[in-house]
Structures are given as structure tokens and as C-alpha cells.
Length: 182
Image (cartoon, rainbow, N blue to C red):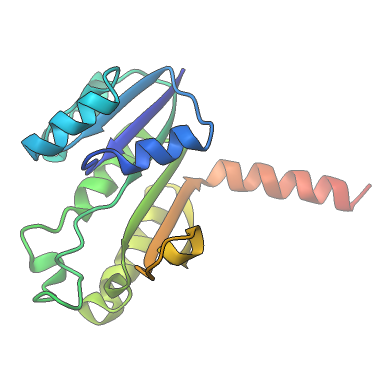
């Protein structure tokens, strides 16, 4: 079973991108707390099941399967325009992303955040994210992508982090080695 989970979903930008990219899912879930955003999301994705606040999601109750998870965890703790409190900010929900990786065990997880994430808490926050990902049994790659790269008339640079199970990385490496040694 292929399942999609849209964390911090807002009105559904990640879900729209997934469907526009041709991805298809047997089950679709989302997590959001803003009532207006939830209403808009439900209008555009009536089949999606709301899980409510990420802090109360029970991943054990979700179906087993191949999960694709996407989410832009709150950026306020890391924004250069904010107070830059990092993990001391009550809006820091990265620990919930880590919990999701450990409990749901998605095949792929995609996270997005502001460039301030690189320098948040003197760079220690981003290093901690990478450590959390590795300790959860995942490998990760990250890149800065601008909205202008997708044709938008503004920069809006963001960090995109792709997490994938280490066994997928090993399988790819094994396949490459097999081709090289033929």
C-alpha cells in the first residue's frame, strides 16, 4: 500500500506538488492545526484523512505500507527575521519529525525550511537534524532551491532535505557496483 502523509500541511502545497508530479497513493493523510487551512485542504483533497495536531498523531494506528512524507516544519525558530530561538522556541516541532521517522518508518521523507536553519543556534540545529536523521536509520541529502528555479518571479530560497532509508542507499550502491564490475 502506498501512503502519503502531508505534515504541517497548510492548504496542501506539498500534496498538490506530489499529485502534479504524477504520484499516486492508496491512502492520503494530513496534519494541520489551522481551521481555515484544514477547510481549504479538505476542499481540494476530500479523500485525505486529517490527523490533527502532529504532537498527538499515533503512528501505530496508521496502515503499514510504503510511506512518502512531506512537510515544512515551522520556520519561525530559525528565521533570520525572528528571535532565532531554535530549540528554545515553543514552535520548534523538529522533534515531532524525528518521532515520525522513528515510528512510521517512511520510505522517503521530504522536509523544507528557511535558509536560517543552516545558522540556527550557531549551526548546531542543522547538525542536530542530520544526527537525528542518521540515528533514525536514514541517510539524507539537502539542497537549496529557489522559487525562481521553478519559474516564480521571486527568489524565496529554501533548504530541501530528502531522507531515505539506508537500505535504499545500499541497494543503489550495490546496483552501481554490479554494473561497474561487469
